[in-house]
Length: 85
Image 1 (cartoon, rainbow, N blue to C red):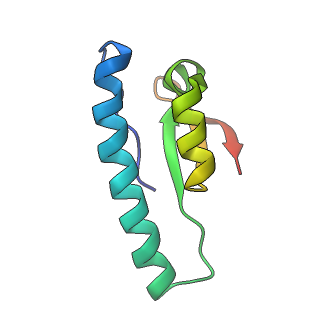
Image 2: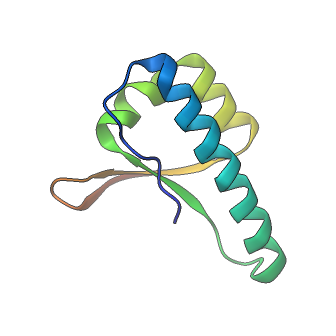
């Protein structure tokens, strides 16, 4: 499961991290569809990032357009918070 790193940076810099993570996710998903088409890939997002950056309109539209499935997690407690189809 690829994950979205959580640097402590302003939203504008988050976009570069997001572009990189999204591109990597799309390539992983294509490779997985080619080798194991019955499996589903999720992008793991730290819960604080999900509750901030992933609530921005641009980010939500990209997730919707590219049909990215998300899972938010708490990196301190090491638990999954929510699965988003």
